[in-house]
Amino acid sequence: MSDIIIAVDQVNFEEEVVASTLPVLIDFWAPWCAPCRALLPTIEALAPIYADSLKIVKIDIDENPGLKEKFSIQSIPQLYLTKAGEQVARLTSRTRTQLAAELDEFLS
Amino acid sequence: MTFEAFAGHPVFKTQMLETVRARWSARALAPSLDLNWKREGQPDSIGGTLAETQDRGEFELRTGIPADLAQLCELLIAAGVRTSDAPDGAAGFSLEGADALLAFGIEWLDAIRPGADLGLIVPLFARHCLDLLLKPEFDLAAHISLELRDVGFRILILWGRELAGQGTTRAEWRDVQRAAMAATANDAGAWSYRIATFIEAIAWPVRSVSREFAGLFEPFLFNWSMYLETAFMTDEERTDREHLLLGWKALATAPRDEAGNIDVDPLDALPESRRVISSDHIARTMDRVLAVREAARGRKDELIRSLMDAVLTLIRGA
Image 1 (cartoon, rainbow over the protein chains, first blue to last red):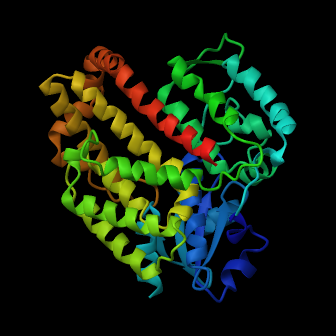
Image 2: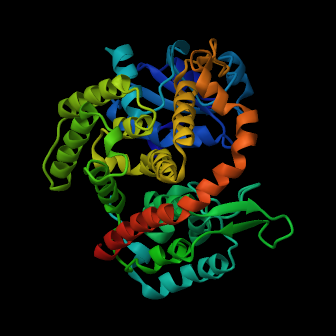
Image 3: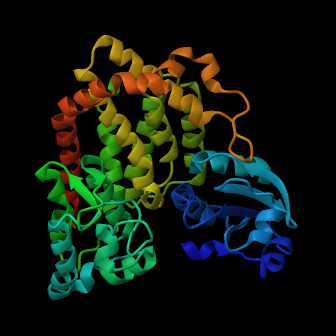
């Protein structure tokens, strides 16, 4: 299941996020962040549901300070919906049901 | 996905359990929702030690046991025991709890038949829990709205169909999810918030809920345990507990900016919640809180043990 969520870093950001033909949901996280680890199963469960309409990636902010700065990440977990590498929405729900409703609204 | 516990070999199982058995008997493992194995600053968990890994995929590959199940079992133990720092002890912490709860640390592993496919244990346990909370005799039954109860039954029916091998559609689930969100939004009760969010979060095919289940069940179980304490409280304490829960809910649901800050303090509109959340109130009532917690210990242990027994029954049946 984790394979569905691509780990993005400064090297593949352009290819995986900016050049993506699908909108990209970025999960900003860090291994030490317990709420981030708690959210991961929810994100993983969403991935197959939106496989045709959305790419889901995760960015470790400790490993990628440049991307943390680019998106002005001040706290984690943080979920950003992006198009062509630019943020179009910040998702604030934390249950799968509410996140799916938020995503449906943006993707419709 | 199918699983084959311990690759079907009793000897392999015995070998894998050897270290866990010794370290658990010595109370040198700390049950955790995370697979902790040589994680910085964290004692090793049962599952982490069993497979000697922090990685879920590796855990499943080495043990043939779903990581979701290990997570659920450790959650149940963690809910019933108290872990405290003990810097002078060999493990750096101490673990206290009823023998019946501590025994489960090894019981669930001993109950596994080598070769068993345990892939459905967590989904079946999820169905068991939803069934329990919809029963009229459920401790918090009076706090569940008809609207929420209806959603619960709709989920139970769809899960039943799924587990019987019949199909469910995305449209059917979308309907239930919309109803669940509406029921949660309409819910204003102090005790029902955790129940409503739990039901809303599990409104998905039960197999797909398995991975998330322990994390979703934890706050629900905590809420349930807290409710059992009210039988040992005065009327005033019960009212204060409700103000506390309403305050927690307001803080948890308040919109936050990107730095995690709240613009308008939601406790401004809830002075009684602010009072009971204040450090002054907490310090003043701490002795009573501990006394009530201790008085309710037996009932809470009984609840957790009954949930453990439900898991054991499912494991033995696999």
